[in-house]
Amino acid sequence: MEIIIATPSINLLGGAQKACLQAINALRKIDCKLVLVTIDKTDWVLVEEILGESAKPDEELYLFSKVPEMPRAAFKQAFVAFFYTLQLFRIVIKNKNSLVINMGGEMVNNLGNIVYVNAIPLRLAHLFPEVIEPKAVFRWKIYGRIYSMFLRCLGDPTGTIVANSKFIQGIIAKYLGKKALVINPPVASDITGSDIDWRNRKNRVVTISRFRPAKGLEIIPEVASCVKNCEFALIGIFDKEAKRCLEKISEGINARGVQGRVRIFKNKPHSFASAALSTAKIFLHTQKTEAFGMSIVESMAAGCVPIVPRAGGPWLDILDCREGQYGFSYKSPCEAAQKIKLLIENENLRSEISMRAAERAVAFDSSVFESEILDVVKKAIRKAN
Image (cartoon, rainbow, N blue to C red; front, side):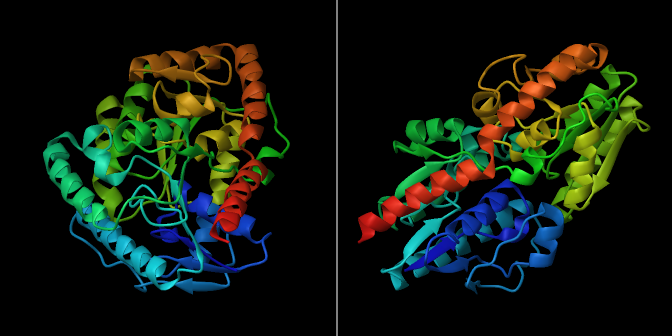
């Protein structure tokens, strides 16, 4: 049997791409021809260097060698969404006897036998001001309506919808009126299974994120200014779309006078991030409407205590809404700083929570994801036959 797994682009180098790679590797356990469909050609060398993972489909289909540069990030996102939808529609129509797994369900949820939703659906972005800049809300509202009309022309969803978190499952039910299963993204088993040094840790707070306005990274200088004797490391991918965000963070660093304690690391390999997590005490996450947050679980598996916004998948799915059990949550930069100081000043408490966090991370091991995604795929195959 031929299984087609589609995603907008592996080259985006984020959590959604990691989940797609893990899905490809899981599907290798099924006797099938595996075809990867994207809109641009995958740079496998870069993917393995940055994400620390790779995959080997039997065939790759793509529209462009490289997505063209755009003057604004919104234009590029619209370009990707439009051509991904067209590419997916063409694939579904042309390959009626194939099983299609759509790993970009946040862009289009009505094409594919299985639709995996990684984030807040694009057409609903205007309902969540934290996702976009406030001045762009009205523009995104118009975009959302146009895009919804476009998607309705493709027909109603008939496949199995899978959300990457209970947070996204709730949004799908509330705003789209659809039921969705929940399969959390995977954390690489080699991270979860690594030996952890619980005690010999630096007073360091690590954040791993793409440099985008929606990530909320501009609060890091403010948090750092409230916490003395502690360094902050911000690790992420830098590209053309990251420039404005990074400039804003740098302005905050200078304004708060924390130049020596907040360091930014751009385009570092996966091994660099892993090493940083293995010696840090705390992982600070800043995106309020994060769907899940694979880097959070990776930090927990490496021995860090996570501090996350009291919202979204990190709070609901990862910390299970249990304050102080696997980590802490916050509503403001000041509260985040208070939690960081508490952990730095109380080593016994930090070590205790760190151990529980590492145990919690095992629940999101890649083997769990593999088992659950294969179960859904096998049911879809039986249904198709």
